Image (cartoon, rainbow, N blue to C red; front, side):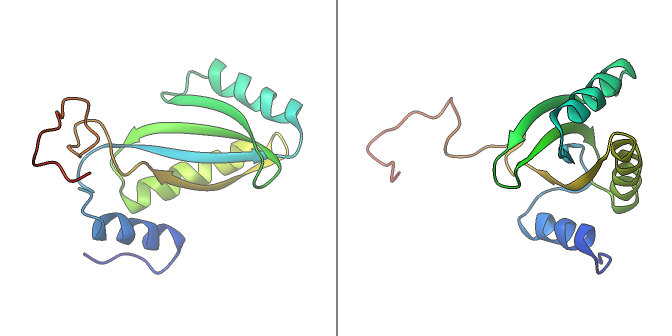
Length: 128
């Protein structure tokens, strides 16, 4: 599979290389950052009022020392769709003196099977 030679393309390639199925909807986290807490809170209120169909979380990111909204949308991780969502969110954040700061996904999504699964029971053959 070919991916564009930019940050989004590299992220999608890394996801494919990790074995993620890019044809299925995933929860994709988009990060919006703001210097001022009031700007971040105003942006969050506006996103909530506009009934964006995603999960929203506000937190202080100590690593970058900025307020951050994590907007999670369930969507197929297709290059053009991600670029469009990121562009729209960046324009939105700019209205509140903020900007986007990339996106990402949790590798283990609902339905994935892995050793940490709650249904797993240890026995004499376990090696973790």
